[in-house]
Length: 146
Image 1 (cartoon, rainbow, N blue to C red):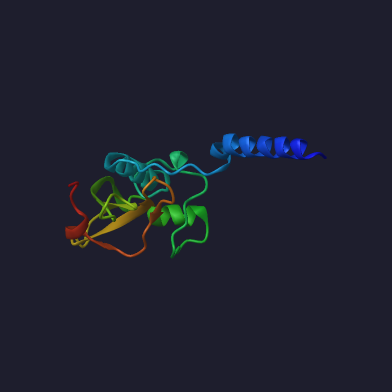
Image 2 (image 1 turned 90 degrees about the vertical axis):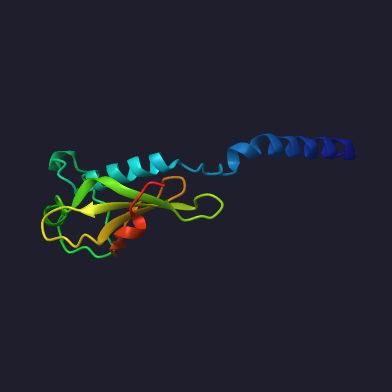
């Protein structure tokens, strides 16, 4: 292959790499708003059986907890059902210069509940990787939407 041919082929590869790179590189995840984080968390707890949402509307595959007491879906649903109130009581971001993640808090449902604690759904800043944390949150810290 002559020098001109090789140089031309090299240029084509460079141009292709430059043009194709936006499609190959992962897009930067966009941070969701506080309101969007709350809406996602409220949907998450409902669709995973923690509210009074009818069982037929709950996800077929439940999001696992770090400490799962029931061995079957039915046992898990029985333990989860109506354990949390469906509306969030507060949201916090964990970043100083903008959120790197969100924490959305929920009150427990039912009688004889310690009103100083809550459950917390955490997620990435882009609304991905939602998890209902096993450890109770301190309600006075998480309550509020400021």
